[in-house]
Length: 339
Image (cartoon, rainbow, N blue to C red; front, side, top):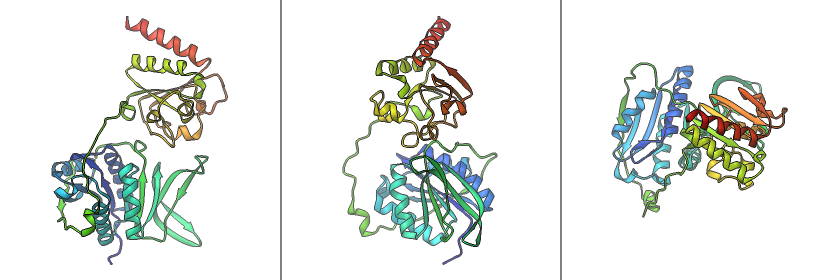
């Protein structure tokens, strides 16, 4: 087996031939990691009719796309995808492989890691390269895999020093998607699809797809409420304010548990990660579990009756007061301005 290269690979998740947004986020982060390692950023793309999508990946810095294009790969299926990606990793030995922490990525990454005996950390919120001294050994250029742990009460840095290939799944929205500076002259390396008997153990018989009613991950303005909103009626004020501002409504886990909002609007460690231009936190204490999903917002406005609430430690504008009264004032002020 060849010595591992310093290459960084990103598994590009696609649906209907369109790459998932998290893949662009990972390519943007992978580009920086590859620069630090002196390696090459490569994308792995499986699907059918995805040759045009492969070229789109150059815009985010991929210098090589490993493409397997075949009708049998049109829909994601665990067995063929895991087998093909595992065989590629085993044969070419990249230094780092990144997957989105999506339903697909969480299914695929552990199987590939197990097949190739690689290290894997799930649900990372940050990735860095660093030198580590561990058990009287010095390790150069390790992938530092950073994620909340112990119920979100600590931020852990995890390393896998004893394996040649380091893998991570990364939560959607925590990395910023940014195009590479200047044109990247990449190349597409098309690889043949060779079927294996196990590939057909599971077949897609029918597909039913339903779009999410909210657009939280891409909303420029998010109005979020916590348990401090008090009642479902008070929480309804957030929808009025969000509608006036052209934004969307989010909730903390406590607000979801209280029945103020549905779980698809939950932001935080066990929900979505958002990065809007403006985040208005209403009746939210600012527990680390919630902050993990919103603290990279452009501007944060916090409203709370408790002046010692942790949310005030990370906000740009703090308002101490009754949240329902303040929101009513906001709504009236915006309505007056729109007349």
